[in-house]
Image 1: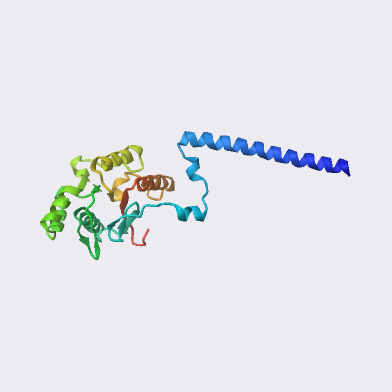
Image 2: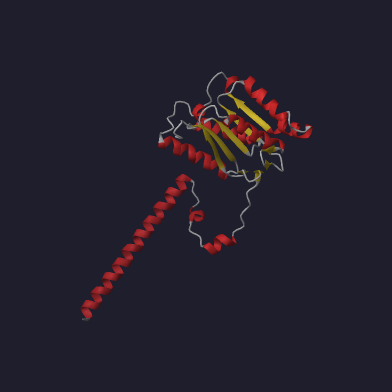
Length: 231
């Protein structure tokens, strides 16, 4: 019996030792990969609900009432010709001017970057002037100061695809340069180049970038054409 007990204890010790060695190798591998990817492992560690409740978390800012909040990803989808661009221009102008869109109001004016991949400059000018006609002089000045446009007619070419690092870096540079809190991408069909919207790999790459913008405090609004069945 003593021999059996000794054998059992040795087996348990071996199992524990093997498990500890495996954990050490796993930890070394995780730390090595995390360093390569520049990931903060400590911030990925699980937290308890108690710790969550005790955390000081900044409240998201209402940029246009509760319709558009800071650090959110929003999408306006509908078939072509139903007014998506008019809606998004009105939202952008309301945020930039401290104005109103339908029942939602911006209590503070914020900078907005509007990436326009489709409109002609004449249409863009006419639409923004029409919206500004309903504003006070102060709101009109705020809108003129806070609303920035990137328009493809000016370069006589398509905008670099948003599923390329260059296209994404270019927009991030414009966000930093203008100090924009909101970026509007109008529309994905025009701004993704020859990309097939059903390409899940590239769509995940695009989503990852939009989430990175959100982590930087930027609100993203995308415009997306759908076909009649809603796809």
